[in-house]
Image 1 (cartoon, rainbow, N blue to C red):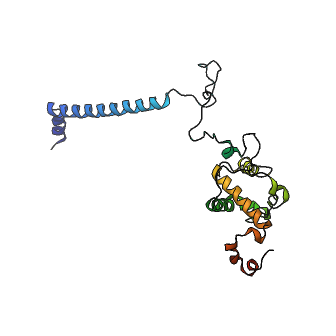
Image 2: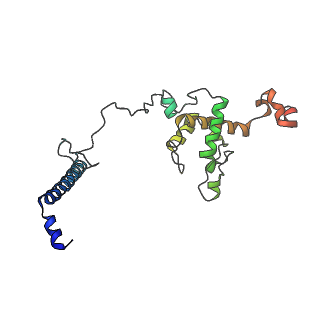
Length: 217
């Protein structure tokens, strides 16, 4: 078909109307997309909020950060048992009591936690010669000295909770019940180094071999 015929055909009313409708549809589509995109951007950029620690003219004290309502307790942090959470009794002093019965399962749990968190410095026997210490870290005291054998259980719990000297706090890593389990295991370690054959139940002495069958040592 000659080019003149194509130009004339494209100018016919039906063809012009088809092109107009197509252009109008494209325009409406692009307008809709632009409208919704602008709406989302506006919501995300202009939402009312305060950046932490930024001052505010709305409140009388000029702070955007608002203090907690008096008496507010975060969920799961009531901590209303002083002995369980602080190691202290009603008199505010470190207690020698445990907040729950010490069973074999508790001691075994304490051994597991001790080997994970404490043994790197204190070693598995509690002498303070762990792998970290052998590589230059400060040497902690042995659990088997008189001073640490005589401190209350609550004192050991407090040291695990808040740290002492070069030892950091382990409150974030070890739950309160597990800290008490570790205390029970430390007491078992101390007893293992200072105990005699009389401290072993008769039915278990055979497990010690000839030494356990020969009476007191």
